[in-house]
Image (cartoon, rainbow, N blue to C red):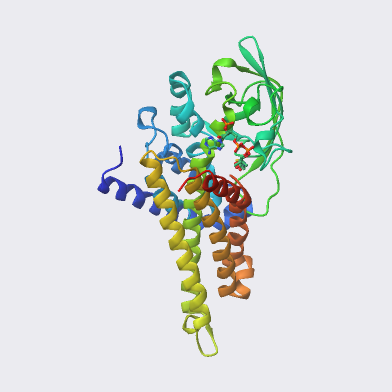
Length: 382
Ligand code: CAA
């Protein structure tokens, strides 16, 4: 059930105030410490942010995709590291369970994910299976009423804090490609799981990615997510949804950067006048606004289509492709408008410039989105 307009406006306003009051003032410190403080995470829990997309019957807010996108526009108004804290519970870590879980699996896991008591992580990528996700080598071999998991997952967001993994592993090694892959819920305390060190990254300090190593980890067969052998499709449908979420965050970040650039251009004087008076600056601002607005409209349209029950694989790929490239261009122009100050850490613009680079890579690179769009077109989608 969509929220009534008043409740929706209240929710957006609450998230807006949380972001502006609790997150924006500490952005630089979070980046410096490479840590989002527990007090902020507690605040996110209190607001129900971990459960945005989890149905109300399991303790979440049960937002529609459109409502989640509107919330992400707000979450994007600060360093993306904050969003990453809740990102896997709202998106790729939990949605396999929401969409494909049995009643028992949902009852067991969703309330804990919705409250933030348990953090979910999405374990698909491997050292040799990035864009080519169907080539995963991690195996899950049936042994009585368990599967025995062996392999290494790479760049797994929130792995260190995770209480459960949505894992994609090859349950039928005789089958190459997508057909032999199954999805599983794996409790993080399963013996045989080791978490690697946090990777040093270009940006988004405060958000962490790790290897996850499985050595003879025994997973109960009842934790298979969806039918055996259908795990690749689980992953792809989870990613279709995740790509809309990321697109909305890109829009939020772009809007923040445009605001920063406008404010700076109004203040900064050169050649005896505010730089906002110069048409070359105005041209950059206008390009940024046009693109951000186009991305906002695109992701909202795709979200509404998804809420109406349409398959939005192509629209989600269009949104992710356009919005992630758009925010890269906007961040670049923001640095340009700030000039030397844009390159200096104190102003924070260079931090966003680094932070947004990942949006063109994770949850499918721009090139993968192009492939998805083209394949769908050639198959006859509108
Ligand atoms: N919905 C439902 N089913 C789908 C689907 C979708 N969106 N996409 C594919 N499938 C189905 C296909 O219909 C096909 O089914 P059949 O065999 O029954 O016909 C099966 O899945 C295999 O599909 P393809 O033949 O298209 O598979 P492919 O090997 O050619 O790969 C791909 C397709 C689009 C390139 C895919 O591999 C892909 O999206 N790669 C990118 C992976 C990715 O996004 N990784 C991000 C990891 S998560 C992350 O980044 C977050 C983090 O924490 C860091």
